[in-house]
Length: 592
Image (cartoon, rainbow, N blue to C red):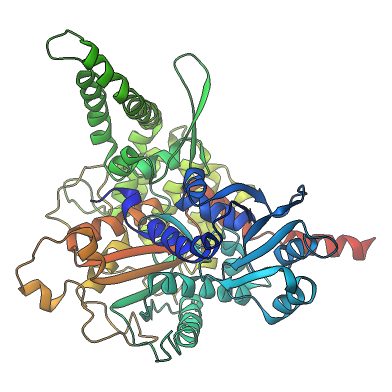
């Protein structure tokens, strides 16, 4: 696989920013100031470094919302979201006395006429350029994107939410900007679900907006559908994957160690606190993140030894020229060693948590999730599998996760049984952790009307897997079926048809001898874009890379409103019962 930063969404987004913002501004050839709001700050930090901006003659990067000193001799680039807050901050820079020589304005997305006219009214003479870039998503990794909106979970699934439709419309607009950035006009399909309508609604919204966006291309012709499919599915489609203990490096690290905003904080040997960013710029992270923790723990010490060995001279003698060569290589050695030190520590943290607690619980989780044990024997009595977990002093969250897997395995349980389980876990006052899954369309209490939600699975019995990592995310089956044109149209209706030729590596290409292709050749093949309403799990992200790697002719890109961790998801599920803070303040005012 190519280097993480050498292909994929992050590279495409940075290229688009360079071709618009940077190219426009370089025409004048002078140094400039770049002003960003919180969203564009985060967006730029995912796809470039400060050194990249310096190379493009951007000397200062500032926060649009903060008070700044005027620099009237310099031109300013405004890269911002088309919101009232950002536009008002921009206007205040020029309304009375201009802070900068001129303004180059770039919006992430469509700017409404009201906001545009407001800008024109106060700042027309200062604006040199005003463009919309169509990038309102976050390129999280090479094949992963988010809409940077964890709050969407509450808005879509809480019975107390009042902005569900508005949230779905915003997600639809963000998905359209993703397709536009990739230059794709995909066929849209969604997973039909008897009692949930969100996937269907979002599919309709996206399809309508895509048709409008591609009504006319730059040459004035209607754009035809491209070799791409967009599949939309709800989180309740696979409730197992996001709560299972995963033993691949990335998923395990985010579940068991305190990583916040992709920053891992750890103590070095001298006791000082250090931080490391886990992203596609760390090539070791890219290389290891989807491997099983057993392989990571085995490979890391070998890598450190290799670096140490490569620094030594074969004959033990150091000449002046050898010393000179060594000095030149030192920064690279130091960087490599530093990366490996970080990952040695992180892998150690994961293994400690695993041996302390997780190892014992994993077997029960896997048996409940898969429905059979490591020898392939069917689990006849799931309660016998669950009981040892309930009787052991595991954490509250670990017990809740096991109870949920038990309930999912049965497609729901009785009221009486649920009450007993809740007492066992001692969450009588926090029943919402379990009961609120019904808001996602996942059956918790069985009834005579319950329809089995068991999804038929592909046969993975011949694949080599670790005993404690037998579960395969359902979305991986969907990816493989979609590429092979095996998705049932009853379960996956077409919101809009995609070209008949779209088959990824399906019937036609499977019969042909496959030629090895470079990354660039692969990119010219078809694309499968998957959007999960309600968050994606790290195991689902991994699946996108695994399927792409196996198929070669089709790139799988996966995204959601946000990325989930198991405990984070449980907290979000519990919070669905709460009323929004605004309603409390309204009630308090009315009672005053």
